[in-house]
Length: 74
Image 1 (cartoon, one colour):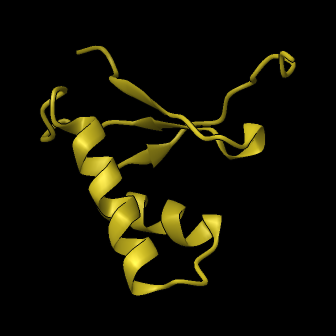
Image 2 (cartoon, rainbow, N blue to C red):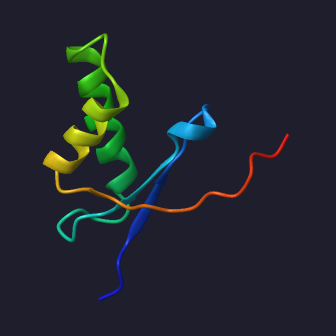
């Protein structure tokens, strides 16, 4: 089975993340699920860091994937 990846966009170039979607999460629900996890972190911890969000995603089975993003376009 091919790996399913999800690109999490951000208004800040350096905060864009790529995650591997767990097999038990439907591909149509993956984005909604990740935004729910992120919203829960933001709500429960107003002074959250990017690492807090990454940890929460990993706790829900999403795996961060290292990637190379080309230069920022202006």
